[in-house]
Length: 288
Ligand SMILES: Cc1cc2nc3c(=O)[nH]c(=O)nc-3n(C[C@H](O)[C@H](O)[C@H](O)COP(=O)(O)OP(=O)(O)OC[C@H]3O[C@@H](n4cnc5c(N)ncnc54)[C@H](O)[C@@H]3O)c2cc1C
Image (cartoon, rainbow, N blue to C red; front, side):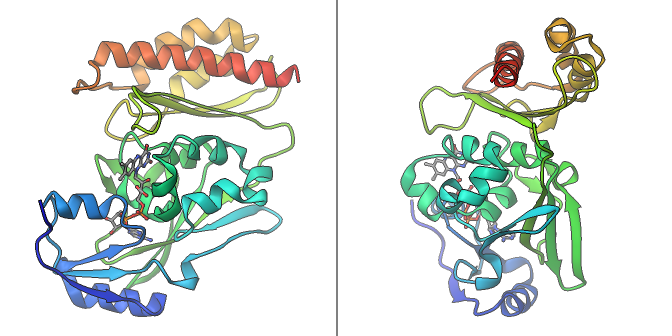
């Protein structure tokens, strides 16, 4: 199939992109890497009248840091995140996850902002953003606002972004020394979207005073921080003692759905397996 006809314009600045978006009203659509949007256009799932290209905007690019945060421009491509020494040192979870995002050709063009704005529930990076307590900087006609990652993903392909807003930057707090992280997903083939996945960050020791953020994806209509399971682990004498209760508590955290890949019982079982494997990995990292 071919896309419906549309007009195309390349924005020259962020301000220009905002003005174009506002003028186009419901008919306007941003395009960054095009890796999710173009397939949707070709399948005629969307019919925008005007595509506004933001792929070349310098204001959206770049990876930087200050004393407290790492800042990732929304237009940063997956390949740039995967190869950045700063990201490798400070956000190893992101580099673990990006290996699972699609294939090299798609990672060469796809952007972080496009990936997050697309909000595929089986996508790896939204879950990482919640685990890492990222904050999204969003710009619209009314000015700037900051949205915590935990409030950004609203449902199936739905985010807190308004139609006339642009995701500009993602800021992630620096992790304290000794932070451990884990990423794993279960997919039918490498490069496919996951049937179930887990991004997890842990601070503290294996027994007592531990903070743990297990975020599951591919299981419901959005990534989910498993708060009840985390509490079971945090309240246990040590992580392994808390595992069984945490696995049971996943029933309170997750609403797995049936689809062509797996039914809800299978997905819940996959979540329990991922949690067990994830804890084993975190404990092994603690032993060095
Ligand atoms: C075969 C295939 C396999 C894939 N597998 C995976 C996978 O395993 N995991 C995964 O996570 N992804 C996967 N993807 C998607 C890929 O990661 C995309 O790069 C990404 O989802 C979208 O980024 P993009 O820059 O291409 O966005 P685009 O396709 O250009 O845009 C996507 C959406 O985001 C909006 N948008 C883009 N930038 C902004 C912005 N700055 N502010 C506001 N809205 C914006 C657009 O208007 C559009 O609605 C796959 C894609 C393909 C084609």
